[in-house]
Structure formats: structure tokens, C-alpha cells
Length: 339
Image (cartoon, rainbow, N blue to C red; front, side):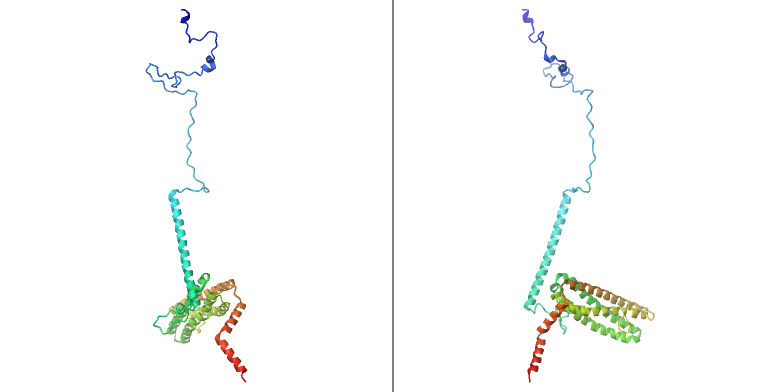
């Protein structure tokens, strides 16, 4: 019976327990910590396990450092959000629509010019009726020329032709003002009758002659790339520029209210002198613009490949193709052959 009192779970004597090693027992869980290793759900003490307390020698976790938001650099793309993207898309769409409208307008203009040129080639007189000068229908004098710069002149030369047309208009208006200034001067000083008469002559002579002699040759030269018309324009417009300079100088007795004539009228009558100075200023502006346009058109003439030799060939071709010249030559030959 003494043997039955032995505890079967007691440690046998003389046998070393490997789990009693001091290196393991010092890390054995303790009841001081609320861990699953020591928590007994069948404990009848009725008290909850003590809360977990970290050891005193454990260092606290490092405090989290909050960094300020970093500003994007100049080379980094900026994000403006969906609103900025919508604005950029709308701007790009508007730009595309504007370019599309411009292309459509240019296409319509080219179609119109092509129809006009085809009608002119076929000789449709109803389309190419003379439209300049723009006179009313009840006027007994009808227009003498057909002019449409936007149709007949190439796109790259239209600005130059328009400028020369405005120069002719400005010079004609200046001649009319010169006539008025000479009239006022004649009313103040009756000895200026010759100056007043010449101002009327210059207004009636230079206005139509300048249109026919240098503006129309330039128009036809640019329209058909004619070297002969370019040559005629340069010859006559160079003389016209000299006349513009003489008009701005205003030699007394020549019919021009230029600077010298206006200074002459300064002492007798100041208001008349002021009117004449305004006309002299207009004459000066006309002369300066004429010289500038002569240089510009000469540069354009060199770019087009025209030359004096081509002008001679065009002149010869035009003379021999003229029906009047051929008839005159035939008549001269018949009269020579007759006995």
C-alpha cells in the first residue's frame, strides 16, 4: 500500500529534467501578464486577469515626425485637377473650331475665284461686267474697267495692290484739298489766280491719269505676271514720285499748296497758312508712302522672276498679235507691191 501513495506525476529522482534549465525558467510566463499562456478560464476566483503592463526597461516608441507638404518644383508638372483639364480641353476645341472656320472661308474664297476665272476664260460677259468706277445706274457714263482684287489678284499680292489703290485714293483726295486751299488763298489774295487755276488742272489731270498710267499697269502685272506691265509701272510711278515730292515742296505759282507756299501765306493770313500746311502735310505723306511702295514693289518684282528681256518679248508678242498692227502691215505691203 505504501507503493500506491507514490505520485505518478512527481519528478523521478535521479533524472535530470531538461525543462528545469535556468536559461528557460527565467523566461517562463508569469501570472502578472494577461497573456494566453497564463490565462485560466476555469479559475474560480471571479476576477479578470490583470492588464498588460510593459516592462520598465523597454524604450518608448519614437515619436512620429510630421513633414510639411512638399511644394512641386518648377520642372515638375502641376496638377490643377479636373477643372483645369476641362478648361484646357475647351480652349483646344475652340482653337480647332476657329482654324476649321478659317479653312472653310479660304476654301469658299478659292472656289469663288476659280468660278470667276473660269467664267472669264469662257468669255461670259454677264459675269465680267465693268464695275469701276462705281457709278449709279442713271449716270450716262458707264464703268470703264473691271476690278476685283480679291478674285483676280493672288493671295500673297493682294495687300500690296490694296495699298496702292489706297495710295491712289489718298493722292486724289489730297489734290481735291489742294484745290480748296488754293481757292481760299485766291479769295484772300486775288493775285493768286494762276495758282488756283493750276490746282484745278492738276486735280482733273492727275486723278484719272495716275489711275490709268501706273495703278492699272500694276494691277495687270500682278494679275497675269506680266513683265511688260511691271516695266511700264516702274517707269511712270518713278515720275509720279518726283511729282509727289514737288507737290510737298510747294513752289509758289505751280498750283501746289506745299511747304514753301504755305510759309509764304503765313504773314498775310494765318488761317489760310494753317489750311495750306495741312495740305502740305498730306502731300508729304503721299510722297513718303509712294517711295516706300516703289521700293517694296521692286523687291516683289525681283522675287517673281520678271526681267527686261521678258518685257521685250511680251511687247513684241503683243504688237504682232494685234489685229490693227497686222492690218496696217498688210496694207503697207500691198501698197509696196502694187506698180
